[in-house]
Image 1 (cartoon, one colour):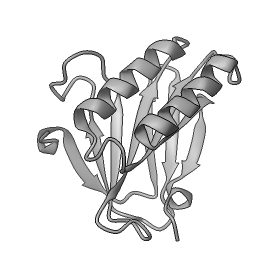
Image 2 (cartoon, rainbow, N blue to C red):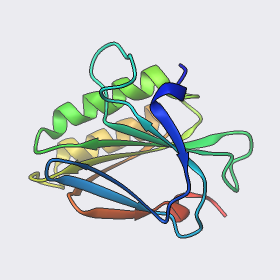
Image 3 (cartoon, one colour):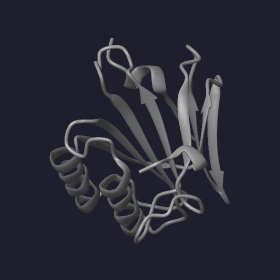
Length: 149
């Protein structure tokens, strides 16, 4: 899928995403160039989709591949967020099984630890090579820590 129309290359120190009360910041202290893709309200994907995708091309330790970071900003419907991220992976991932993926569901209200969330984490890891994280709004992730040294 051509992401060009909905993307921009950036290397900001802090890359923030916010929708209503949900917010996540990706800290980028090494100013790595990433591709920020607006998925929702831009890409033409059948079915539900997540809000954003961040792509880190050819990071250290990942030869000839990329790291994909999927972001869904939610109020409280975490189950729906899982469907949105999964459908987005199926439709636009460069490699559904092999590309390293990090999926963030940012929520304002949610039990952050539940058997259902634990099961989804295992499911995403096994099926999509994806680390699934459900976090409260205001969460910050250091993208440098996602890159293997």
